[in-house]
Length: 226
Image 1 (cartoon, one colour):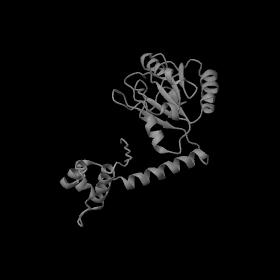
Image 2 (tube, helix red, strand yellow):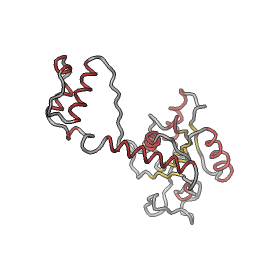
Image 3 (cartoon, one colour):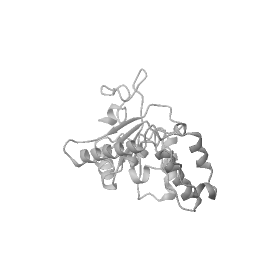
Image 4 (tube, helix red, strand yellow):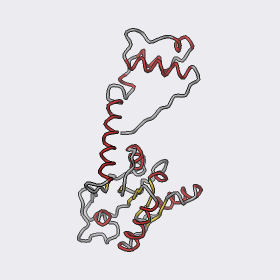
């Protein structure tokens, strides 16, 4: 029904082609969708039982682990360059990273990952530089099922992440001059010096990172775009 409401698989101007989440100008525009599933088996159900049987007019491509790595970029290029293709079916693990699919403006999650960052990364396949339309994201969740519990865990994990990285320590403009200088000063003297007694917790963390870097240790960094 989401596909129909967004003008996919039905004639433009049909009776059931309006949805607030799918913005239109005048007549209903034809949207294109990315459908993410966790497993190939779920993609099989979507492709065979939904698209092929119930919506035969919908044209689609499929990208999952069965597609050789050398052919994946060709599929992405084909989808972006051919407006007659309505849907791209993807597994989150294969299609959720490193792809630019801005030709689509509808993202549908049939099921969800335990790691909320993987779903957020998958959303960003359509919401990237070059996207000129509003991207609508839909999650299919049934009450009292495993999917509802997974979404609850996702919200909990995101809450913990936001508690650790907040507005007071997430950006450079919240750091003092001394903290910024410490980030770029990795000389042995600076690396060996303990944090000052007036240092804030973020000061101490910055010194610890500088010390690790100067000593040749690895520093793992992660970022999330809001």
